Every structure is written in structure tokens, then in C-alpha cells.
Image (cartoon, rainbow, N blue to C red):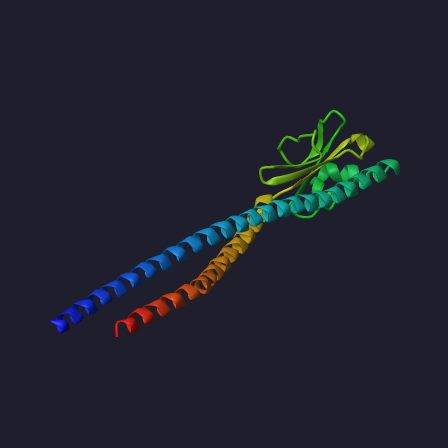
Length: 220
């Protein structure tokens, strides 16, 4: 009879031991899940906000750089116009009548030029899109536009408009660059999260092992 009670007690203790291990294992998984949700959710949000801010700043810097370059081109064109008018040079007028306007002012590739009078009437223009003379620098579709008024009526020209083509390609490259940095940052954050989760659960695993060992030894 004593032997029977001992066997029954051993089975009961073994059952309790297994139940404790299962409960602790479930708690461990829930702790891991909660930690990862909180950590990854917060760090993903933070990284995405930083990426958006970086992209916004880069777009602004890109526009400022292009505006400065187009301003220098407009200044060069205006200087040529004023010089030709003041020195009564007819070479420029003959060039405008016989050659594309960009060649007369030696503009780089992907740039077009438009010369308008004081009433915004086109005099020599190499593009068809309408110009917004109320803005000094703006973007329209795939192009940047810069409007300069420093010609001041020399050779009948009041507005000098510089147009730069193929802006979408540059913007697309910048977008892919930011997305690449974003993907690498998220990947690194995810890997770091699992490493931290492992360190976070290590004390819990040790406590589970200690408790499991204690229960097993107490049955002997």
C-alpha cells in the first residue's frame, strides 16, 4: 500500500512539474512577443520619421542647388545680352536668328532658354510650356524653371527663363537611395531587437531552469 501511494505521489508531482514548465514557457513567449512589439513598433516609427525628414531635407537642398546653378546661368545669359546691347554687337542677334538659342549662349545639356519682353511676349523661346512669371523658381512636371528679370529691357528683353529637363530621374535616384538606407536601418533594428530579446529572456530562462531543477530534485 505504501508503495502504491509513493507511485501516485510521484506521478502527481511529475504532473505539477510539467504544468509549471508549460506555464513558464508560455509566459516566456508572451514576454518575447510583447517586447518585440513594443521595441520594433517604436523603432520602426522612429526610423520612418527620420527617413521622411531626411528625404524632405534632401529635396530642399536639391532644389536650392539647382536654383543657384540656374541663377548663375541666367546671370551669364543676361550679361551677354547687356554687353551685346551696350557695345552694339550684332553677332548675338544674327546667332539668335539662325541657330538654336542654347548654342548662342552655350548652355549645358538638359537646359532650355526663353527670352521674353516686358509684356511677357516670347521673343526667342526653345520650349512650348507656359511660364509662370509670378514665381522666380518653381517645378512643373519633369522640369525646373528659373525666371530672371535682370536684362532690364536690353535688346528688348525683360525676362530670361531657364528651364532644366529630366528632374524626375534625379528625384527617383534620391528616392531609391533613401529607401535603401531605410531598408538597411530596419533590417539592423530588427536584428538588434532579437539580440536584445535574447538578453532580455536570458534571466527568465535561468529562473525557469532553476525552478525546474528544484522541482525535480524535490521529488527524490
